[in-house]
Image 1 (cartoon, rainbow, N blue to C red):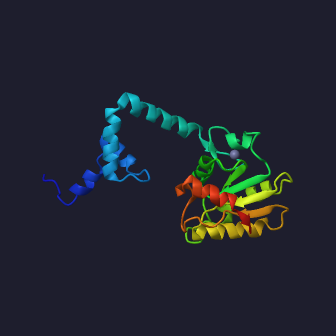
Image 2: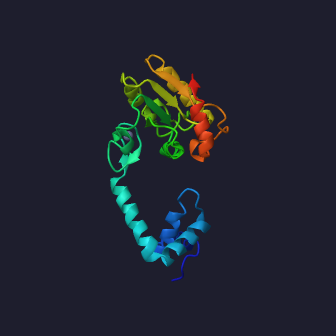
Length: 211
Ligand SMILES: [Zn+2]
């Protein structure tokens, strides 16, 4: 019985990939890595099997088990509440609202902010069906209602979605006795905080102004 040539590609595609192919396919799904860089990364890992590949595998497994979102602020940490929420040296009077954890890291790298954060986990986007319910905005309003909180800094970036989100939050926060400020413009249009150099971010924070 001959092989049906028309079914061959499909049956090949269903064959289990080799371990190496699977590794490359998974690496290629990481942001910033295409198939070519995934192949390079896989070769590099196999060359550095003991010094890099095994420690990386165990760090991945460990992080997958332990890292979670802080129930208070949305930051990622192995403990809940996170290290920033637990730190008694952080100023409880100021909450900086950011879209993503990467933006929080950018603020922390700049070392210009000593308050606490609220990570939304995204920005409002009608196109992507992301509304206020998806962004933990009720939790932010709850936190901002604490009498210890005096200022909420909106740092949701200069994209259209970032600005829409900031305006929405400013409206929702308007009834509370807190000053609502926005990072100064001078942020590159469409720029996300994570891509800013520290100097630009520090300047934008220092020159923040009430909405
Ligand atoms: Zn936290």
